[in-house]
Image (cartoon, rainbow, N blue to C red; front, top):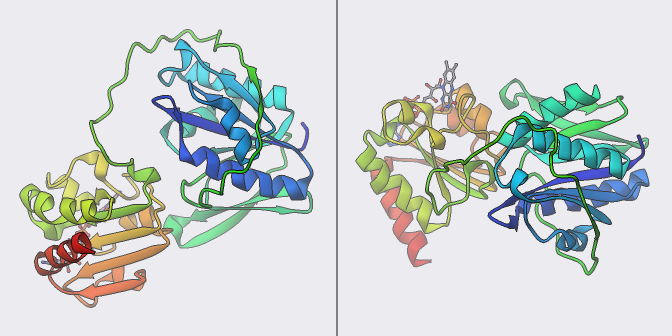
Amino acid sequence: MGNNILVVAETDDGAVKKTAFELLGKAKALAASTGGAVHAVLIGDGDAASLGAYGASTVHHASGAAFSHYNPAAWTSAVQGAIAASDAGVVLAAAGPQVRDGFARLAARLGAGLATEVTELRAEGGAVVGRRPQFAGKAFSDVVIRSAVALFTVRPNSFGVPEAGGGSASVSALAAGGDSKEKVVGSEEPSSDVVDLTEAERIVSGGRAVKSAENFDKLIRPLAASIGATPGASRAAVDAGYAPHNEQVGQTGKVVNPSLYIACGISGAIQHLAGMRTSKVIVAINKDPEAPIFQHATYGIVGDIFDICPMLTAELESA
Ligand SMILES: Cc1cc2nc3c(=O)[nH]c(=O)nc-3n(C[C@H](O)[C@H](O)[C@H](O)COP(=O)(O)OP(=O)(O)OC[C@H]3O[C@@H](n4cnc5c(N)ncnc54)[C@H](O)[C@@H]3O)c2cc1C
């Protein structure tokens, strides 16, 4: 395969997801060192040509009914087709549920190496090196993939969205997932007006200390709303029924990578840290000054969440 870089651009309700712009910005910087061109494969209906403003020279567009819901076979075929059409040696996609599923299939089909959940990418000696957290974020490994196609999934919010430039991309249509034997008739998403945890820039999470679902609604959700954050929870809070499972952060919940993570009454167990340790700024509120979360916090507030959270919410709402 060649030295072009292909970015998988996902859509949500007809809009290109911000993770696509983030990855294109990084791909453009990498391609400046490795010498290839940047291509994108846009899955679903959306403005393909607009990806040119972020560095894509060509967009391979898979649109139509086969891509209105995630269909594993159609999705995998489309990305495989785009890899062949773009002569890509490196493929980048945002680490999310669909990509996690689709990239495992692609890796098997292509005999390609796959590095998941990388948080940094750099060019070195003509190759792309991915840095990924290991052992719940206690260590990092640098991964170089030697197979003809190298697949990387990247944690959202790792690089930031670059300024849009003036470029425009040429668009070519991809065949619409012809080999799918599955038919997805619909999908249901939880109704929510906040950004999904995995892509959120700001998160406010509550732990066991919250004590009830009513308190979660009274303390955590208003604090989150005051800064446009997405609410999250520890497993203890979820198991106790204070918050739904789709809000759980951690090893058996969602892995998040926001700019700001506020942990309210969360001790900092290793399984929770596994899901949020790469957050850029961590604020911990805990009444126990010895709580392990303080070892990982950028800012710590020793105090009772029943006092601190309402005070913070009022301050932030009036700011
Ligand atoms: C296989 C496995 C997978 C797991 N996966 C996950 C996972 O995905 N996510 C996850 O979160 N956990 C996970 N866990 C559970 C994890 O080990 C911890 O039990 C859990 O994270 C604890 O949640 P917590 O911090 O809310 O509760 P606790 O550990 O009970 O901590 C509560 C904290 O609140 C503080 N506190 C109490 N009252 C107040 C107050 N009024 N004001 C301020 N602070 C107060 C206490 O000092 C304490 O530090 C997993 C465990 C296992 C074994």
